[in-house]
Image (cartoon, rainbow, N blue to C red; front, side):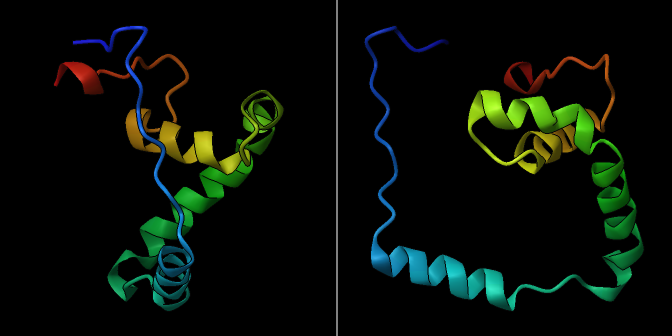
Length: 88
C-alpha cells in the first residue's frame, strides 16, 4: 500500500558512534575467495556501464555507482527490466 502524501518517514540519524561502526565494518569487510570471480565480473559490468549512469549522478545527487548497483541487484543490468520487488 503506498504511503499517503502526508506520511513522513524519519531519516536515519548518522551519529558519530554509528559512523565509526560503519567505517569499521567497511574497513574489515572482505570478499570470500569463492565469490571473487563473480564479484570481479559484476565490477567489470558496472564499470562498462558507468556512462549510462553518469546522468543520474547529477540528477539524484548520488554517486553513479549507487543506481548502478541497485539496477544490477534488481534487474541484472537488463535495460528493459521492470522491478517487481514491490509485488513479490
